[in-house]
Amino acid sequence: MDYILRAVAADEKVRAFAIRSTEMVEYARQRHNTSPVVTAALGRLLSVGAMMGAMLKGDDDVLTLIMKGDGPVGQLTVTADSKGNVKGYANNPLVLIPTNYAGKLDVGAAIGYGTLTVIKDLGLKEPYVSQTPLGTSEVAEDLTYYFAKSEQTPSAVALGVLMSPENTVAQAGGFIIQMMPGADDDLAAAIEQKLSGIRTVTEMMEDGMGPEEILQLVLGDMDLQILDKQETRFFCGCSKEHIARGLIALGKQELQSMIDDAQPITVKCHFCNTDYTYSVDELKELLEFARVKSAAKKVGIIGDDDA
Ligand SMILES: [Zn+2]
Image (cartoon, rainbow, N blue to C red):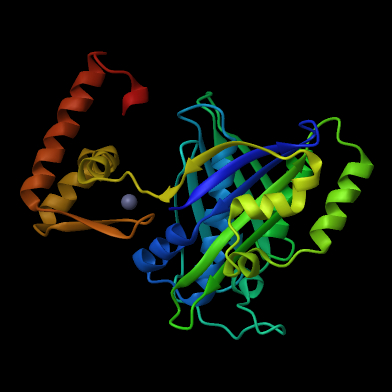
């Protein structure tokens, strides 16, 4: 089971999140048939997205992370909620590039130079949107920069995805450690010192360490308190009805021209790579819905917001 731990340490001057995301990343790999380097890139972003979702306070709050670079992957999109559900996709899932100088999957080159966009929909009229430049494009460093720059929260972010020899996901996980108001430079230096001496997340996981043991290793001598443990998973809430709403929103003319083509149409949910097919008869039903809807709008039964 994948899960996220939420913890505090040093008199709540430090907060921490740690995740085991092996199953979620393997599921994403299977759904999207991603190449190893894209599995690593998307897996890191899914892992950090799930933890940032756990930072959201409202039940209906939604977080979206978009890494858009000039590398062959194109764009990575991840969406998470506050209940441990996360989903995501890569524009080009099949990228194959040489490993980097260290013999590792070259996530940075696969993504390339570009921007990280963080969108938080907190149920207000406008979502909160922040954009920062990508640095290494290795994901963890880019999120560290985001937290410092956009949230003024000094943070350490570590993320890892380890592939098996069969190119399935052997281990995936990570952690975020953040300095809260009141944390002084000595505390930050002590944590930095600790982090400089530990192995990578996936090396520790290969040795049987889980999120608890990893947090214990870093913050164990700073009065670490685990506050809660939340299940997390790759989950896309799409359905044929849900996608149909998008088709209705295209409008009567667009639907009529699809019907005139006299061919069923297939719409793909990018997040989970599921195809939904609508027969001509179903398209006619949707057109009827669109007609009723626009008639209702005209007489003021439903507002524009519902369109
Ligand atoms: Zn879907």
